[in-house]
Length: 277
Ligand code: ADP
Ligand code: MG
Image (tube, rainbow, N blue to C red; front, side, top):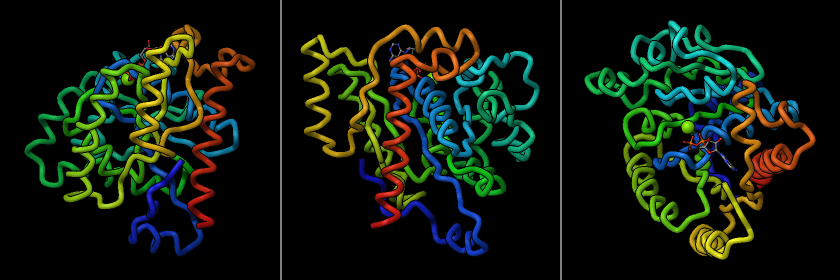
């Protein structure tokens, strides 16, 4: 897995002068819905945590699936990422420490695109909000909504890298060009170093030719940026959120948990390869 050349921005490198390392900020993005962005955010976070990493997850989707899948009820949440982005509420105040550390979302967040639109620095609201907590975590994973609107643009502007979960289907692959165009615009205008660090084939079913061909196409187009880990299709990933936990807590010995452990190792090794380069 390739990692973008510069994980740290110059101002962060200065900030780390005192020795405190800064979090690797990763967006899970794909404007298509139902490709396992939220599932990957939760289970990659749980797997990294199991390896001793300090992880913050951010629910940036007004549908609040990440918040819900950690057993939290968005309907009773009074302050959320909306207040962080639009009212400059410190992010620490809306982080719930459950199985994972979750900066929560509620349906309010649906109004954030409109509220942000007229603000100066509207694309950098999240980047700014993360500054006070960067040194407290090793990883910050941002779950994004299924669109390329201002919320996703905020996520990509705040991130060092992007992991793209892709369903193993021809039509899912077609949507990647649009995401790449958006990333190109973000690099030109807002965040020069952000790039796709990994493509994750999800809902993989090796028994179908179509699925195997879809992965072949991904490899042709993205080479070593495609993770070696394949996330297979299984109902375990839908069952765990009902219990309010990751699949690693729900079925620790199962293959579904093992797949995300393997992904976490790839994500960590990518960083090591880069640090020693
Ligand atoms: P997104 O956040 O991209 O919209 P989700 O993570 O919510 O996608 O996943 C969409 C649905 O597919 C959910 O019901 C989830 O439980 C299910 N799902 C996710 N990954 C898998 C998988 N590997 N196999 C089967 N179902 C999955
Ligand atoms: Mg989602």
